[in-house]
Image 1 (cartoon, rainbow, N blue to C red):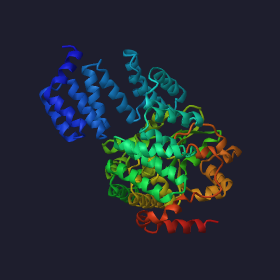
Image 2 (spheres, helix red, strand yellow):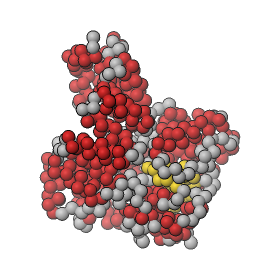
Image 3 (cartoon, rainbow, N blue to C red):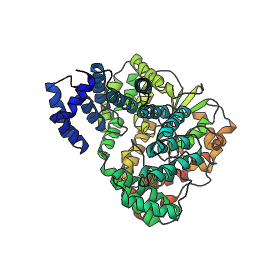
Image 4 (tube, rainbow, N blue to C red):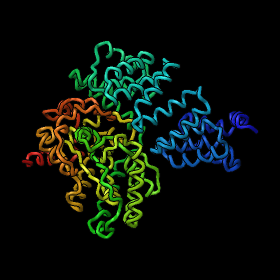
Length: 545
């Protein structure tokens, strides 16, 4: 039987039809049981294998999904839907070279299917090939000019490379095509430089009333929160931020106690004695500069400062350390801290120096696709890597580590009003944010105690108060000579792929962002969860000469 005939038969199979219905209604447990039953009876049923892989991917079990899709393609190399799913799963695991190879194979097999080109474009964006990604999106839009999601994707690339006006135009084109497209409205708001007029406000409220799905609604709430904040209507602004966060939080499995358990395990097991017993080892390269901390703490500014140095290349928030940690612990990485992460610590501490060197080499090889300039040093600004300082120290002992830190109330509220595409599940609840900040501060204090001087703490408020002093201190820690260009990072035209892209293209602010104080009356859960950490932070600032 041909593949086409097998797939046509699968569409009429009652068991597969029932599994598809369960998937459509998000009853993934039901779908999984049904599909496993089909495969016990018919282990080479490729349609069922692909569907089970989709279930695994939707549950964040990407390694399982990858294995299933590899099996489906082994059985049916021309199963293009399965290969497209394979590209997505490889992409989600940062296996970019493999993802590109399979995308190219799809394009060669079905050149008229521009969906394959869209898959390739998404991978190109993640590897910093922005011109090629724009070319791909332009080809798609030439054929399908009313594809609103592609206009938004194109807008994201234009924002990244600093073509702000064109980015605004792309987002507005998406809105014109699909007025209730929440992601387009939020993307426009997230530029943080494009204000909304009365007509826009009316359209956003109408879009919210008409929105048919939760993603459109919560994106619109975040966009309205920003628009109302700009107008000084803080009560209505907070109401929208809170509504968007409630909706997003309800969709995510984040549990604060898991983060706390991971941090406790790190403090218990990554001791000075444990590091001493492990001895020297790891890869000797000093290429990486890790900037860690919480999102919205000023890490993009630090990255822009360092990337203005002739010896340093800025990349983006790289997932490779988290992937290595997950693989050591025998689980999938989903970008969210989990107590299961602690499972890798005993394994890591038991590795030989040569094995740790291999892991360091793996990190350098995996991030190599992001390096375009030939500069000897590069920046990895994945904030969540603060949870893996011990891992970084063991596999890359000469890497530089910088802790970007900001007033916890300012940082916490800034994260609360920011919608992240993935990987920051703690940011959608004020209490979760406060608990997370305390865990982060505790584990960083632990590493300072057991690895004194290994991590440089840079407080955002000190950086903007005295940029030259802090920048010289930063460069000294990175073992880099001072260069005047680091004092004017806004003149650096490099692509910036974070929510702060437009802020860092302006001169360094002269005063800290105090926006959170307008919302202080509603931030009680954050302050309570911080349990005095905000007061301690302010005290520390006053003690710095």
